[in-house]
Amino acid sequence: MARRSFIRGTGGYLPERVLTNDDLSALVETSDEWIQERTGIKRRHIAAEGELTSDIATAAARSALEAAGIPVSDVDLIVLATTTPDQTFPATATAVQAKLGMTGGAAFDVQAVCSGFLFALATADSMLKQGLFNTALVIGAETFTRILDWSDRGTCVLFGDGGGAAVLQAEEWDGDKLAGVITHHIRTDGTKSDLLYVDGGVSSTGTIGHVRMEGNRVFRHAVTNISSAIQSIYDETGLTGDDIDWFVPHQANKRILDGVAKKMNIAEEKVIVTVQEHANTSAASIPLALNHAVRSGRAKKGDLILSEAMGGGFSWGASLFRL
Ligand code: UT7
Image (cartoon, rainbow, N blue to C red; front, side, top):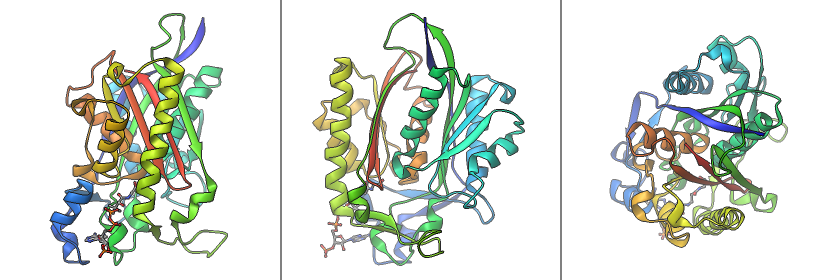
């Protein structure tokens, strides 16, 4: 018998305010046609004034707990992936812990930008398997639009705010190895940090800074890096694209996720695409897409799910799990 973690429920939350591509064309020289053609994005959600990353994360967590039918009193770990914390410290995860009314356990943040959810999932899964905790909330939540330069059309049209969550629970298991959370391959390359970064920070400028990106170069690295992480999963498990029920990629650009799916032999109808609804929500995009797949009735219990992401750092990775 060994411990294994299982996904018990998913949840998501998008702020009420919607900003369309046409709204953006009043701010910068862009068009609905350009944005849709190059990215697949139609609209994004913007956090209300005073609405914090922890509020978004808490809403997503509550919805995941409700779907799982698990009371918050059972949760003993929160791992929150975010690039846009409420404050420099304490960790935003501890604000979520307080807002949920949790008095025990541990809560901390993980920073891997758009790959954050996969890094958080791998972290929580490892801790559950080791027996350090039993029930974890893995959350990706962002108020990413607060670090955008609204005069830079190369970035401001691409991102949005939101949050998604999954409840993970450990079980003693001696059944099928391809059950529950199966494997992760996560990677970083710090030599490419100048292609996607924020031009501010606590110990550098003392300011929050704004997102800067060489989009075209990031695009090319994204397809290569993500494909290599997925190939590592194929090599480790002996599976191929045919064995996957659903592909739940990071939602940055429809052209990237289509390109990766094609390269890795995953049929188009298995690809979950939500980027049109909320743009790139960084660490929130995978759990939002996963939650959509589940709640729309497409992904069902027992389905095999492959997920991937790529973000600043560079950071990237892929995860395989069964619902
Ligand atoms: O999640 C984190 C990882 N990030 C990503 O995965 C993003 C990766 N990159 C991308 O998604 C794409 O590179 C973009 C969507 C950012 C850009 O698409 P592209 O096809 O790579 O366009 P480009 O950067 O090569 O720019 C093409 C043209 C340029 O004009 P010129 O130089 O050809 O005259 C840009 O100035 O499009 C122009 N452009 C725009 N035009 C209208 C750039 N942004 C805009 C815009 N509206 N918003």
